[in-house]
Every structure is written in structure tokens, then in C-alpha cells.
Image (cartoon, rainbow over all chains, first blue to last red; front, side, top):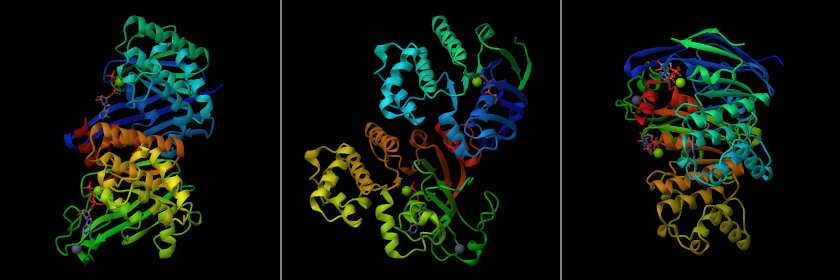
Length: 236
Length: 289
Ligand SMILES: Nc1ncnc2c1ncn2[C@@H]1O[C@H](COP(=O)(O)OP(=O)(O)OP(=O)(O)O)[C@@H](O)[C@H]1O
Ligand SMILES: Nc1ncnc2c1ncn2[C@@H]1O[C@H](COP(=O)(O)OP(=O)(O)OP(=O)(O)O)[C@@H](O)[C@H]1O
Ligand SMILES: [Mg+2]
Ligand SMILES: [Mg+2]
Ligand SMILES: [Zn+2]
């Protein structure tokens, strides 16, 4: 299968000019994921977990280090060096990012959101309705919600829609930023089943979770982060 | 941050626009980097000779089907950039290239007036900040569109009327109102007529200047929906100018931030919003949150 993601010596600091502040968010991160692996990260608030994910997704500007990714389109490339155009291409076709927040577009139904994602990824428009229903059903979103606007959804419903919308594109690498934060126990369990299913289907995942318990049995390896550094892994 | 250059729909290089001739002090004090030397300029204005440096060395690439956002405060040069690209105003220096014209090899600022007219009418569509600039307020909505069709060579009245109705329908102007003049329309409707007009010759590139400014929130949302839909369905490339980061966040893949006639920062839109680098952009973004 081989290595899908290889993060080397990745560091990031923020300079807030107007506040005269310099914040070190993460330092010298080394981490790699085999294709099909599920790696989890926990750690205290502010320890730098989201920073790593956002550097991979490139919503944070890279500074030092490398993020090698084995693209099906471009082969092995360093996401830190990749052009914006390449990043947009990868986001559309190869990478997925799911957080606890749903970026909703006003007055767009759940069904339409998934259809749009399908077409954005190059799926045939006439297939879109079928694919959208398949995904919404697969991720257990109540049928009554399919044609409503997601800004009224509960946290768990938003999350499942978010995952449906991301997974309709079949990303090779899925980044998960605390997908279970603020969910009740029942919804958490649903998400757990859902992620387990994705893993069975071969999706490679890098996820942040705030409880170890949740990750156990789900992730292949787990890391603890503290003060911008990644601790030793303690997985299988 | 100019990247791979092959295949860009629009390529702008070092575009500069001055109102006034400039003087040795302001001409030489310029172009010395991003934040260091501003020369004698006060914002974009030279107090010595009175020249306004509205655009200074603007370079950008727009990919086919992409929406590129341009944000910046009032007076930063956004509309001037649109007007120079649409040939409403003559750029002082610089060049730009359009892929569908001569394979993107000719600097279209230097081609004949006739070729420029053809480019304006067949390759470009413009929606002005102020609808008065883009529409004849006393012609009917249909006639406004016919005017643009005629400019691109249409002559058949029946075909033009059919096409105009189709376009107005696409932007949700009801059939029964198509014969009325835009002076009787609401602001949101006027912007939609402008959009229909801009689309009339199926241009690959749209220039949209503050299309939602001054509209009610619910009307704004409809216009934005329309733009998103046009991009999804027709794959048109667009430059979207706005001083509203919310609009840019919703529409643009990549964004340029302008200040005093210059691009101070450019990047993926979410990166500009989540990890802005320039002090000015940081101010802009933090005041939004
Ligand atoms: N966009 C940003 N601008 C400035 N500072 C930031 C930014 N993002 C993160 N930081 C800072 O970097 C550090 C690490 O933040 P990060 O979001 O990675 O933490 P985290 O481990 O994900 O925390 P949490 O569990 O609370 O989500 C924090 O000190 C944070 O304030
Ligand atoms: N015809 C003109 N003669 C002199 N100065 C001009 C002319 N047109 C524009 N300017 C100046 O050029 C600068 C840029 O103006 P422009 O209209 O491009 O700004 P803008 O970014 O679109 O602002 P806004 O957000 O208010 O629409 C301003 O300082 C303006 O006063
Ligand atoms: Mg976080
Ligand atoms: Mg303007
Ligand atoms: Zn001067």
C-alpha cells in the first residue's frame, strides 16, 4: 500500500502584527500515515492539534518543513510547496476535511449540498440525485431532513451531513478535526460506527479527538500532543 | 504569488493606472517593495504633483471557471482595475492577456481599437457597482440586452428578443416585467438585469464589481445564489470585487487583498481569512470576527 502522508519537521508560528505577538503553534512535527491507516491525535486545548490539520489542508500558510502526499494525479508532492491551483485540485478530488462546524450555504438543502459536492468532484449531473440519496442514507441522516436547510440541524445531524458531503467525493485522505465535540453520547456512538465503516472501506484518516476512549479500537495509532510537540505514539 | 502560467484565462502583469502625470518624486519613490518606502505618497495620492496612483503594478492570474475575489477598502483601486480590464479606462502601464484571444499571446492593451471592442463584447461581461453605469435606465430590460447582442453582431430581432427573454428568465426577472425599463426596478432587480446583460454573449470571463452593495440582505443572498449557480452551471471565470469579506468567503476560491492601489496579499480564500499575513489583512479579518 505504501505511505500516503509523510509530515517532516513541520513547524508553524503566528505573528499578530497589531497585537505585537508571536505564537508558536507547533514545532518539528514528524508523522506518517500508511495508506488505509487511521491515526488519532489528542492533547490539551491549544497544544497545536488543529494547526497540523490546517497546515495539511493549507488553510494555514506553510512555514518550514514538508508535507509529502502521494497524489493519484500528481504522484508524490510536498503540499507545502504546491501551488494554490494544485491545492484546489487536491481539495476537490483527493482530500477531505471535516470539522465540527458545517459551512452552510444559505437556503441550500442537505440534498442539494451533497449533489453539488458530487458534481464539483466531476460526477455526472444526472447521477447526482442518486448519489446524494445513497450518501445521505448511508450516513443515516433522517429522510425528513433531506430537503430542509441545514442551519436548523442539530450538531450530530450537521456532522453526518458534513461527512456525507465530504465522502461523496471519495477522498483518499480524510482529515477530521474533533468531529465528536459537543455531541451527546448517542450521537458520538453513531459517528464512531460511521468512522469504523469508512476505515473498513479503506479510507486513510488523520483525526483529532478529545477523548482517548473514543479513539481506542478505532485508530491504529494514537499520539498525544503537548505544547506544540507530538509525543510518542502508543498504538497497536 | 503567480504560479504555473499555462492555461490561465486571464493574465494581468504590472498593470498601473495613474490619474495625473506623476512627478520625479512620486514616480521614483514607487515600486520599492511592500511596506518599506512609500515615497512621498499619502495613501495613493502624491501631494507634490497631485497625481492619484490608483493601481500600482497589479499582477494576477485567473484560471478558467475560477472565481477570484478582490477585497480592499474604499479607494484601494478595485473599480479602477475592473474598468481598465473592461477598457472603460486606459491603463497607464502594464499588460494583460486573455486566453481565448490569440491564444493568450497578445497584450490586449496594445491591440487595435476594433479588436478591443470585439473583446469587450464577446469575451467580457461587466456588472458595474452602480447600475446607472451598466444600464440604460429608460430602455426596456429586453432592449438593454439587445444592445449588447447587437454590439456582438446580432441583427435578427426575433432571435434577440428570444435570447433576451431567456437570459432575463435565468436571472428571475418575470416575463411580464421584461418590457419595463430598469428605472422602475428595485436595486436587486437592476443588478440581475446587469448580470443578464453581461451574460448575453456567453463570455468566458465576468467582471463583477460590488454587485450586492446597497441591497437588502435577503436580496443580496439571491444575487449571490445566482452567481454561484452561474459558476456551477456555466463554468464562467469571474473576478468578484467586494469590500465585504463575507461575500468573498462565500464565492471565491482565491482572493487578492488591495490597499492603496497595490496587492498586499493573495492566497486561498480560507488561508487569507484564517491565517492572514499582512498587518492590513489581519486588521481587516480581525475586525470581521
Ligand atoms: N489562526 C491563528 N492565528 C493565531 N494564532 C493561532 C491561530 N490558530 C492557532 N493559533 C494558536 O496556536 C496555538 C495552537 O492552536 P490549535 O488550534 O492548533 O490548538 P488545538 O490543539 O487544536 O486546541 P483545541 O483543542 O482548543 O482546538 C494556540 O496557542 C492558538 O492560539
Ligand atoms: N477619474 C478619476 N480621476 C481621479 N481619481 C480617480 C478617478 N477615478 C478614481 N480615482 C481615484 O482612484 C482611487 C481608486 O478608486 P476606485 O474607484 O478604483 O476605488 P474602489 O476600491 O473601487 O473603492 P470603493 O470601494 O469605494 O468602490 C481613488 O483614490 C479614487 O479617488
Ligand atoms: Mg483544535
Ligand atoms: Mg469601487
Ligand atoms: Zn508626484
